[in-house]
Length: 408
Image (cartoon, rainbow, N blue to C red; front, side, top):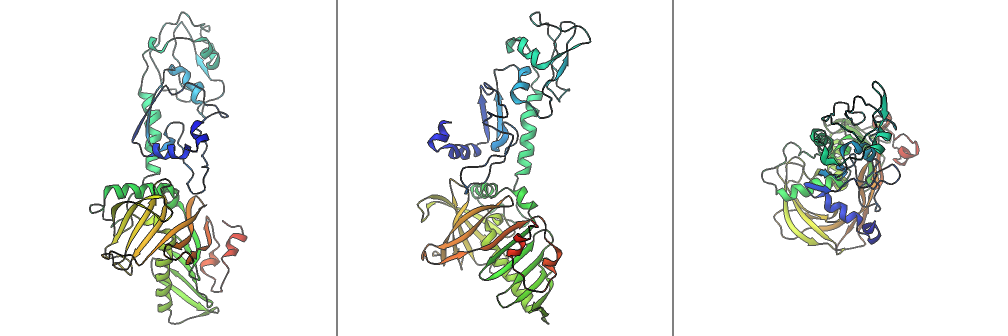
């Protein structure tokens, strides 16, 4: 609460995200119920639109780190603390003979040694006692018992493994892992998480955007692509097979090879202007770490270098990518027509981040050298479904209709 009031809450969370192991001592001193829990089962929404929503995994592992809890609270009382969703409000446990063999609700395989409990009111044989009432009666010190730690390890590590798998960011085939800087790779992974995470990016299917006066609609899963020029030219093609058709005023253009190639080149270029943060570990890329540098905004950034080997139409190009150290988002880039040059051809900012279908996209590029030189990406959209006509209809269509039709 103090951190929230002082405006340091998000900064503290980002610092915790960088840890590999976090030891929480005396965790569990208060009940984390559905109305007062600081660490929630629900997704957290950050106070800033420029920072992606955090994706929690249960109670301890929502920061993307391995967490070990060493509570002084006796294990049988953890059910009141964590309240697993699989457990009913009142869980019954067999109590007989003067022995005690409690179980975590929903996890009947978790057992401990039985112990004589003269201070506990025992229900008659073959009857049951409710966990809540049993917890109120039992007042033993944890040192009296020998608890199995196997369940605790599974409780902490299994969700962590699932979290790590869901947030893994393996490189694309052809990424130069050996020549890339380890720190740069780590920062690239942090960028991917701040952009929404690799799992969400992989699940993203349809995207639309308009840049440099050209419309783009892309089915990321199948490769189908719709391109529209400013002169009523429409190209319907598959960027994976390079097969397709071109139309002008609704009439087929034959041969269409030149228009197909031009649309594909524009998909490469305009797509990079929109989606570069997702492509830091792409095929043919070598990542370097240039150091820390203050951007035009005065904010401190990690500077990554991108070099290419035999990919794209301009493999001799290079980029410096400025990653904001607080937000872990790309905030600026510099373009080099010749990667070996000491002076970039232009430097521009990445601004206007917003959440589209679970991923973060920035819609504004402003030249650092000339603030009046502004490029705005419009018709931004991420969709789960689109009608087949989007990739079949040769007539020019307004991309704004994709949202107005409410089909995403």
